[in-house]
Length: 86
Image (cartoon, rainbow, N blue to C red; front, side, top):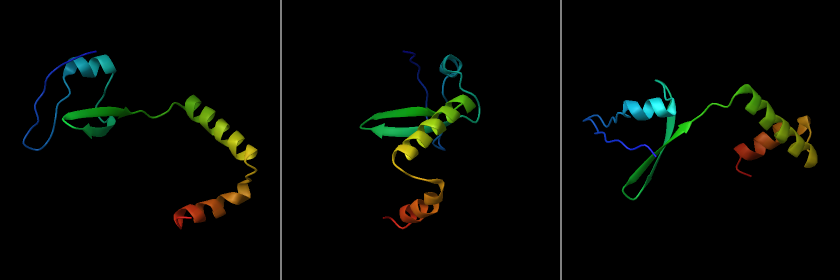
């Protein structure tokens, strides 16, 4: 586990130390989820899936939809129900 210290600026900004950015391959523009628990903060990188990962997830979702008996024509009804909170 890599450890380093940093400070928060008057604008609430925190710099992630260079050694940790390099170790994790972080780049300008990367996005994070920020979680707090007690006196601990955690940053979780939001990673964009590769096209292969996306295709695999889509394949699993389609198989699940088929198993549940859903058809493409059911999509508008499902969206409407979710938006109406049903």
